[in-house]
Image (tube, rainbow, N blue to C red; front, side, top):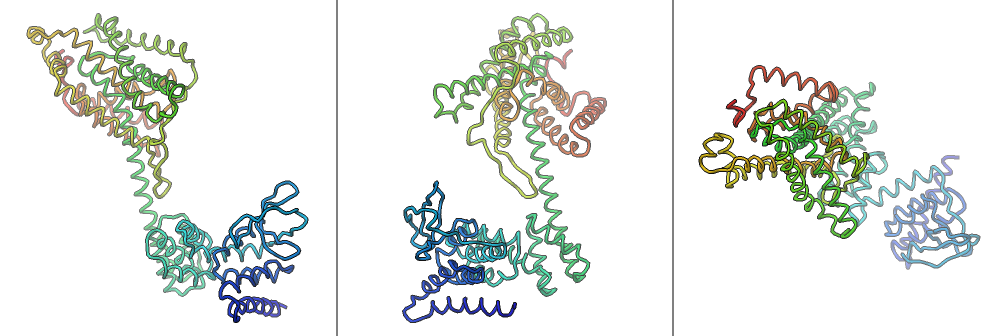
Amino acid sequence: MAVRNAIFRLVLVLFAAGACLAPGGGSASGGFDAALVLLAGKSAKKRMAGIEALAASAHPAAAPILSAMVDGRLYYRKDDKRLFVVAKRGREFDLFDPVAGEQAGTAPSKSLKKVKVNNRLRRAIRKALAGLNLTHADRAIRLEAAAGLLKSADPGLRPALVAALEREAGGDVRAAMELALAAVDIGPDSTPAVRIAAAERLGASESPEARALLGRVVGDAKTDAAVREAARAALQQIEDRLELYRQFGAVFQGISLGSVLLLAAVGLAITFGVMGVINMAHGEMVMVGAYATFVVQELFRTFAPEFFGLSLAVAVPAAFLAAAALGVGLERSVIRWLYGRPLETLLATWGVSLVLRQAVRTIFGPTNREVGSPEWMSGAMELAGGVAITYNRIWIILFSLAVLAAVMAVIRYTAFGLEMRAVTQNRPMANAMGIRSRKVDSMTFALGSGVAGMAGVALSQIDNVSPNLGQAYIVDSFMVIVFGGVGNLWGVLVGAMSLGVVNKFIEPFSGAVLGKIVILVALILFIQRRPQGLFAMRGRAAEL
């Protein structure tokens, strides 16, 4: 019975191919037309022969017809057996002629009959589609076909894959085809030498499919020992590269966390390190910057939604001015009267932080506020092993470094920076030189608070904008200042990045909470040996 069926299918395929070569038959179009007749046949044998003949015809319409057939959208008209791709609309069908590539009007559903497909035919269609798509003019379709063959390697498609490789010039499509060929060659039907060469090719890929194929070969006790050893070596190469990618991802996440700590700590380094003021309301300055971003974006959404991508650029100076104004008011109303009394300053600014948080709850409500990201900050760059480098984190890293550079430039190259350094190093001498130290104090506090406001703009892109936003970073900011060295901006940079990277390497083993405890204990032990931090302490606090 099986032999008779095979002979019958062979006759049908030869009939279709003969139509292609018959005089006046029209070369490939004749075989294509004969294949269409077979697809409209009543028996599954004829439809199988039609699928094979259609794949052999290499006609441009072959792939769309087979795709519609496997999706259940291929019908033929009962009176003339003409094939159409249909879309249901009530009791009628919208017809599309796949051969002509154009709409063919409508027809009542009772005038059409569906081309039936069983599981065996579906497998044949997918195999035929893979072979056809390997030579498709569209690069994306060829790449998708090669990726599909990697997932389900079919030895029967090896000739088509080899032929497609000979035509492919290079690039990622050729690399995907070579990987798919290796997936076919590593199968048990190949010789040991071919399987070893295929394992070496698969070892150059980090794809999950390559790892799974090599893992199956390693775990198969019936496989030749040399082949298993080659697969094991290739699998180890993949694991080593994936571990390297994971380490790179951990470093990136650590630098990302460090940049957030840097933004939150730069302003604190000015107020605490330069002025000697323990400002427990510094986190609320960060919060004010985040809410300023929210207000600016709401204005853009209301009055200029087409320019929403510029909202963050406007929010940065707005957040700086809002937080700086609040800082000046805090310095002149509370802190000015408490210089030299650190404990009283700590308690007073803690009370101010409570007042600010409650004021924000009253104005904006206790729930999180939505802050959008512009298109140029959205998305991520995917690496092997599931490592993702998000664009918003990259921009925050660049932004934090730019803020640090700007603050250093202000302190080093401006008249205000010169006066601030003079007051920090020797206040009585600065007063004697005519520098108004009280004004310098206010401006210094405004600068530190304004930088904290800009930190709020960045944090609004990766954290919830809520009244408690700043409290999540105030303790870590003080840790960065103490570890890096009070009053030294380079110490802030080194301290923030070091704590961020170390934290991300510890978290996988200890968890987030225990990791912070470990870092805190290590920091305490470090300060016991080096009280001045990584860099020597400078400023008014050093003179006390």
